[in-house]
Each structure stands twice: as C-alpha cells, then as structure tokens.
Length: 243
Image (cartoon, helix red, strand yellow):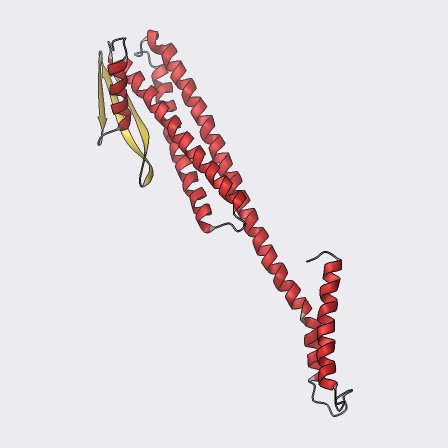
C-alpha cells in the first residue's frame, strides 16, 4: 500500500488558494480524499473517457491525475506571467507610479510563492514514491518524465518571482525619482527666495540711519532688488543645468 499527501492549487474570484489532497493505492485501486470538488479531478475524468487505452490500475489514474495537475499549474503560471507583463506595461506607461501597482506586485509575489510551494511539494512526494520499492518498475520512466516537467515549472516560478522583484525595484526607483524631483523643487524655491528675504530683512530693520530710508523711491528700489536677486539665482541654476 502506498500513501501520498500533496497540495493542489486553484484560482477563483478571491485569488490563489491551495487545498490538501490525499492518495492511497492498495493493490490496483486508487483512493483519494479531498474537501469539495476539484477541476483537476473533473478534467482527469474527461481524459479517461477520451483515451483509447484502458486504465488497468490505480497507478495509471494516479499518474494521469498528476499530469493533469501539472498542466493546470502550468496554466496558472502562464496566467501569472500575463499579469506580470501587464504590470510591466503599466509601469512603462505611467509617469507617476500608483500605489495599486505596488499592491498588485505584492499580491503576485505571495501567489508565486504559494504556487512554488505547491509545485515543490509535488516534487517531494513523487521523489519519495520513486524511491519506494512498492512502486512498479514499469511506471518509473513515466514518473521521471513527470518529475522533469515539475522541475521545469519550478524554474518557471523562479523566473516569475525574479521578474516581480525587478518590477518592485523599478517601482521603488520611480518613487525615489519622484521624491527627489519634489525635494529638488522645494530646494530651488527655498534658495531663490533667500536673497529677497535677506533684502527684505535689511530694509525692514528699524534703524534711524538707513540708506534710502528717506528716499522717495526706496520701497520700489527694494522690490526691484528682490526681483533681480531671484532672477539672478534662477539664471545661474539654468546655466548650470540644475533645473
């Protein structure tokens, strides 16, 4: 008798989820235990009705279930890859990154890790079965092919996760550029208004002896000096290509 426990993944309106499935093979009969219905089992039944070759033992059905599950995992990875591509395009088109994009990236990272754990769990189960003496020798080649497909999916999940990390770094970089631009604007504004503030402070001192204090155009002269000082600072920044 062989016993195996694994986690299957699914996607619904609430996102990605995993659910446990237990397998028990005794003699030529396969027993499974799971909670609720599963699309993987429904698709396997459809394949069994289409296949010409009969399914003589429970191991045939067990391997077909795993092959169907791997195809479903591949579809989930492709769907996730399309979502990552859409996010990448959004980052390229958006001049100002939105918070929703970062939330999507974080959600996809969690889903990618969950799916990777599910795939690695199947790899662990099948590797254990491959080492078992109870597993028939005639099915080992087919089992090796299934393990090879699982290894390909593992590499696919790694690639998707690396893309998500790259997008997260890109988003962070865009946020930093935006913040630096805001800080740069405030810095320029502060420096531009420093000379006029200094001139206004000088002309606002309450001293009896002050140049131009009794001049009839002293007020207008102060305003002109303030405007010229601001203009000179802006011209200097422009010449240095700082703004």
